[in-house]
Amino acid sequence: MIGSSASRPRFPVTLDNWQTADQVGWTFCHIAEIFPTALISRGSEAAVPLSRNIMPVAEIGCRDADGEWTTVSAIMKATETDGWLVAHDGRLLAEQYAGAMEPATLHLLMSVSKSIVGILVGALVGQGAISVDDELTRYVPELAESGYRQATVRHLLDMRSGIEFSEDYLDPDSGVRQLEQAIGWAPRRSPDVPPTLRGFLLTLRQAREHGGPYEYRSCETDVLGWVCESAAGERFHKLVGELIWSRLGTDFDANVGVDAEGTGLFDGGVSAALCDLARFGAMIARDGTSLNNHQVVSAAWIEDSFAGGPDSREAFASSPDGARMPGGMYRNQFWFPWPDRQVLLCLGIHGQMIYVDRATGLVAVKLSSWPTPQDSWKLYSTLAAFDAINAEVSQGLR
Image 1 (cartoon, one colour):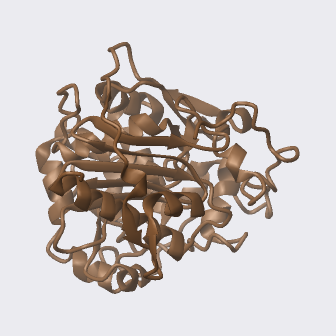
Image 2: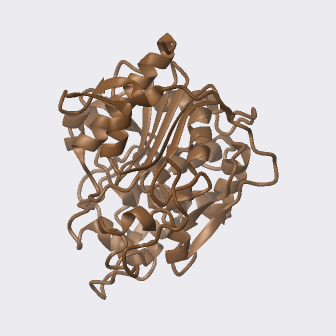
């Protein structure tokens, strides 16, 4: 399936409707035509070719989230997939596109962007520019007057600050939706919401002790992006271009949505091509080394991510996500759904996913336009499909 560049939105795109079910199939593939963005450069180095070894993985049988027998292909069709691929050791085993998406399309990653921030923090830790044990105010003194006073970089990497923040995507007045208002991605519903991302972050207040239970909050990643910019003295899009994107051997530039001050929406504003996300996943599977043998982030950072901290799983278990992923954890802006497997997930609402199995070297990517932000059946059916592919590839496709 190859998407058509002739695809158009059903009606004029506005702040009120760009995330609605009728529009997301087009808008997620055209963010730079809707909002201000900053370019994340792939640099001048030649792209690393992904050799094609196409296999019939779409017809592999699996069970969906209800336990019904189906196929990978059927799950992809049932979950509003704009593009998906599977790669193993730098070889493409499957690659398909639909709707408005084509191979060169930069698709909105939503919270998969958080995992890019996690790798950026790791790269800056490797350079000695950031220490995860430092308080945030060492890098951003302005945060001393906010709820983030005395919180550390580690607290934010693992979503364990004590900040009060609602991640309710269906409540237009929740914290996450106010954050979108601040950056200019949603209609302003209150004059009390600051007109910039940094201004909004400074209004957040502490509800409990830092370092306690895990709680998923997009604002944590935005503060991390601010820390990265302050520690390195460069804007996020420049840092990601120099330290990550240009070292992966990517085919295409990426971009990130920015506010009136040029601050990026670090928690969910990156758009990138499907094939380049395979290269990002392969770097993780290769312990921080890209397919063109650049050390993007240290092997120690990747190992720490998979190993977690001494109480990472306990902190995760105390949250609602703990019931959905028993024994799992959240570490360094990644999800780890199983305690006994080397599988890492980068997840974003409306159906964005990178699946990496460090043990088998398999990377699977799915970019979607679900009509609703969250859908458990679609999420776990996609996981089941990628698990089935992983099992077949690790045993040798028959």
